[in-house]
Image 1 (cartoon, rainbow, N blue to C red):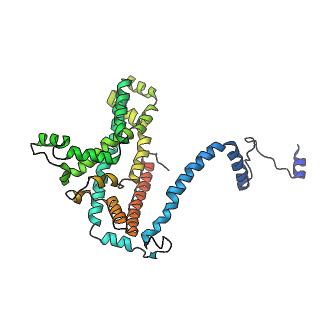
Image 2 (spheres, helix red, strand yellow):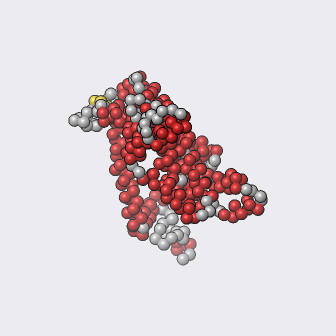
Image 3 (cartoon, rainbow, N blue to C red):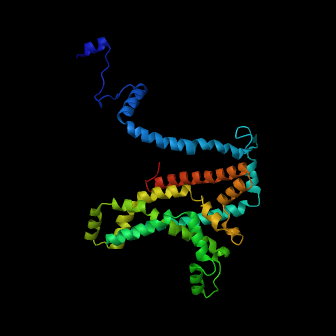
Length: 331
């Protein structure tokens, strides 16, 4: 087809592309290409629609409820009929008698939990990676995963039983310190270590899965080259293993920063008592107590919104810092 005939007939020449798809046409080609892609990948779009529907129904539509943070919410009048009070709930929280204690406890427990339970699965995965006996390695992995599947109610019951006067942990503690066996949960100074270490026992195995998967993807030729250069186990781990899983560590670190102060309220509610209340009451337990106990839905929503905003700021900030320093990030 010569150029004169093309110009005369007004025919537009198109670049060679995948059969059926249009490479040219800009925005006008999008509906055609999308409809064609949906027809060709029908089942993939069905699965995608289920996931999108889940997030839409359970995560995005409920965000309308954030309006309660700025209202004197009444279940009778509903979200759109309740009285608008602006920032009153936020002012009442920060000027109230519990703000300092709640923020202090949340920050301390959150940082302790992060300092212990973020590196613990990494270290555990590195130790498992050094085990050469595959049968023993599988047994250790299976045993370490089990606590994750135990309900928080059962875990809390076990902790209460083990730490009460005459319990296994209490007796062991009294034997090491030459003190009389007593309920350790009644000692305020021991509540936080018990809470954090019980979380380590519950999460260390399950949390190591992603790091074990990352370890399996490291090129074994790098280890051979390191051994030829005279590197021992420690140098291989420092110069080959850790750099190999660093992108995964970075991703998990960013995700963890988003929930740094989202302390598990369910286990705390089951473990705290008047004796340790001063060190165990956190923002999430306050939200539960005010929202469901006092029926002050506006205040509980406002405090929950504050906690969520702090988590969002920490996530975005850590993502930006790690992107500049390591080159790895979530987005």
